[in-house]
Length: 226
Ligand code: ADE
Image 1: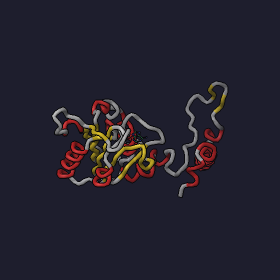
Image 2: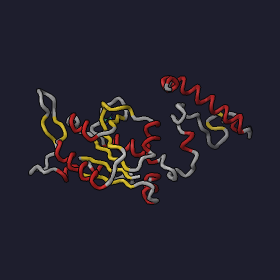
Image 3: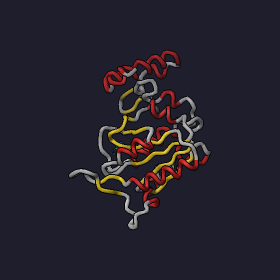
Image 4: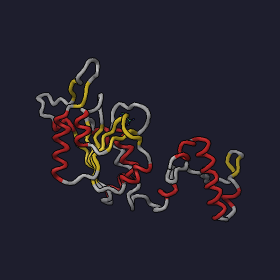
């Protein structure tokens, strides 16, 4: 898979993709991440990347020209399966969308800024508009990292334990059950005895009950989905 990220702040990406599973996924050529500085494509003599919004008091909007030129350039080089815009007024990103995206070949993610982008640009190029939550970030960079991270770990071969993605929270619209490690008694509290029983089937049932109870209590909305 190839992910092209279009950003005004490429330096924000130093770090998050250079550690742990995402680093290993790149080393093993399971994913290529390309960070593009939108400002490098501005033909404005001051390399401006923002522009005024029509109408009073509307704030600044990302300039059309550098974004359009960069997307056209990338599209002329290869086919893209999805072109994504990160924005608080997008569809809510979730595990199902992450699963779908992990099966794609090439995707572009544009990190939104200011008051966003021109509506005509949205309609012309973007196949998906994604929000990572009902709150407003300073820009779409962190959102693009969240989306990339959630997608990359689902690419076959990225996780060490192939089965572990299947037991993630949300994979069955359920939150994960609690987990325990050593010691058997910590701070006077014992590990639930079922986990020490050696009865794998009973443990699976217990985990399912725990997941269901936790989901009912904390995220009843998930149980209503589909
Ligand atoms: N940009 C600013 N806030 C955002 C959000 N919640 N999701 C995606 N992109 C954003």
